[in-house]
Image 1 (cartoon, protein in one colour):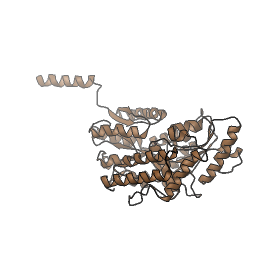
Image 2: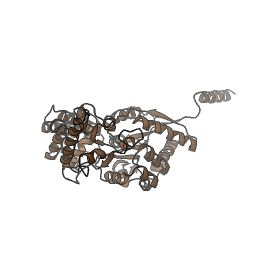
Image 3: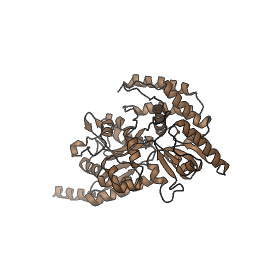
Image 4: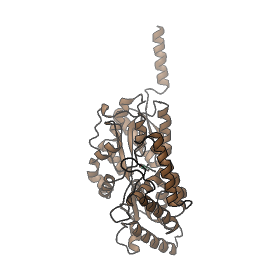
Length: 421
Ligand code: GLC
């Protein structure tokens, strides 16, 4: 009897605490993205009966990493599922915090194979799937390009500087004193690293060589960083706010208000620029980023991948959610509604998706050739060093060579301490 009473009491407790345990999904991003995730969760519930609680994060990648690390370091059962930036997925995976997905019957073959092997495979097992793939792009005002007599977007950085200088002067002279030539992400955060890698690689450099040895202060990298600083201080086509505050959304809003000729951003900006309430709707084009030599531009590989925590207490349901989010249907909706570039190859052939985003074929080329950031268990330490030195150089406070020498020296020490890959 006592036992029965205890059982009744326990089930009462269970019901009064809100019924069956809920799956938890940790995700952040721009406000409209978080809102869209709520719809995905509702569709999942309709289909499977499984309830999901959204654990909302900030939009900056560093803050998102921190909240995930806090939960995983503490071996917490929540979140069960989370989105991970491709930039730090290796760091999370190498701590052994992710559940291999193959064991739940999930098939990685519909996804970009190169990305799966580069970012999602650890010790031969795949531990995440790309929900969307990012690559740095050049957005330009197609109406202004024509107005100032240009036929094509710039293929080299020099052409970009020339066009930006002319259009900036012209638009300011016609009354828009806020108008700037070129906006990019230069604040001291991960976005700056993504931008810097694009200049470095387009000059023939990189952060590490293929063996993992730091080559930060190479001649090519110094030339690239000098150009980044010159855009602000010598050519004056990029405003000082680039190094004090510009992140993805800051850049996107400024350009969208009609106040810039060029913008470096990720593909999501396309959806926002072409929305009905956008002042630049129908006046924007997309091109690959320029190079020091035409055709030799580079784009950093970005994007967000879905994974299940090793400490989840609902792994089976979590895997079902991963399967749902990465299904053709949901990937298509994310591409249509948010302008995201799917991790699945088959969605790129869908007629509705192509009609909504005619740039998709260009974008596909950009992603396939995109350059990854180093995948290291201590990547964020390296990134922090580079962020500080590069930001100081583009602010004009430190000579470009001195900044890269300092970064090289510090990174050598970190690698000595933690060991190469
Ligand atoms: C985007 C990219 C991500 C990158 C971040 C930097 O979210 O998808 O990979 O780290 O921007 O701000």
